[in-house]
Length: 336
Image (cartoon, rainbow, N blue to C red):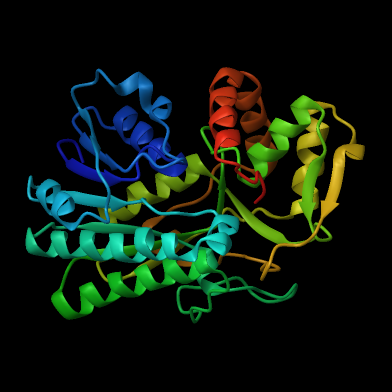
């Protein structure tokens, strides 16, 4: 990895920007081109400290533009790491066509360009939501769990996964799919659950919780996710799927109460609201494959990670305020 040239799509988003930061800090010889459409969730401030770094270059372009994608991929890369996606479930319910264009059509263009120009490795970043929902006592999702997406977002991601799978099996494109559980950590857009809770709790505002608040998610710190992607990039097997989970199952209500306790705020701020349409009850990842084959382990326990995440938002309120102002202008819902 000492001299790799990487193309990262969606690198101004939450996970993508954390990954770029992780790689530039870890590998002095790496060079990264960040291909991002600068949608509402893409924030140049996320990588401001690297703007003058000669190893980093930003390209403002959209994956739905096949010509623009091909032009960039033609420059030649050792690997593509594909984060770019519309990802907020509420927005997918309101505008599913936008998700089909970004997540399905955009991925198709990227895979075609990678095939045409012989990219030796493509990592397609997906989500555990493609597997559907679990009951309370069901075992966690494995890589062999059938895909059963329940929202326009997860359906669009499942579709992009299948395109990646087909590109490997039909054309031999060396693509690897990763499916992660819910991420949290610094630089996450405020519409997502954890930054929404932190933001509203700091302001003493009511905290909206869908339904009864007992929907369960497996939480993965973004740093652990970046470490896993790094391992897959270097040692993963083309054509394979790797699940990445944090082994931190919590109900949404537990997450809210943990954050309120960390901030010293009252649970009276909790406000139950009408449940989301098609709201999956539980996600849980079985990550034994990536552990046994690549030696990955999550390092950050939820109790530790949530405290450092809350602390980050408390000490980066200027960053947060700028995002919230922009979010209010486009009438973001602020729910996850």
